[in-house]
Length: 136
Image (cartoon, rainbow, N blue to C red; front, side):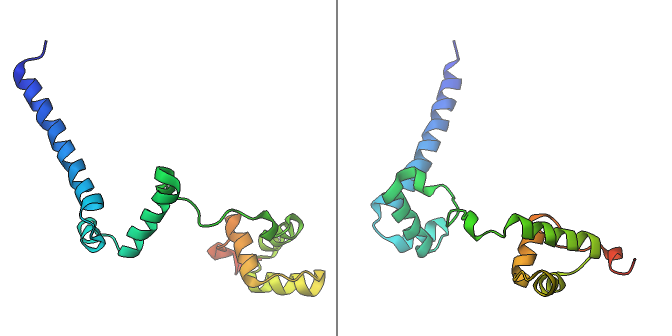
């Protein structure tokens, strides 16, 4: 059996956590003033209303961070083009502009510099090593 002193300390700790929860509820639900609530928690009103709308629509699940849009594989660069980009980068050390130009001129593949950069970044090849440019 625990001593009465330990029980009192445990009760005080639970009372303190309940007070913190009550404070959150006071500002979030009972004030009715979004500006004061936002100022208290240090967030913008835009964020407050986005969170409020997400909570109203989906409950607590709506407050979990998620991507703004789903991944769309139709917009990705086709695999055979990615292979050519990676080959040109590894063997000739071309930059994104030259890879884009090379593919259009010799393979009739039109891809933007940004598209080439996205492919290179996805495969961890977005930076050339320092000694790759000068050595042949």
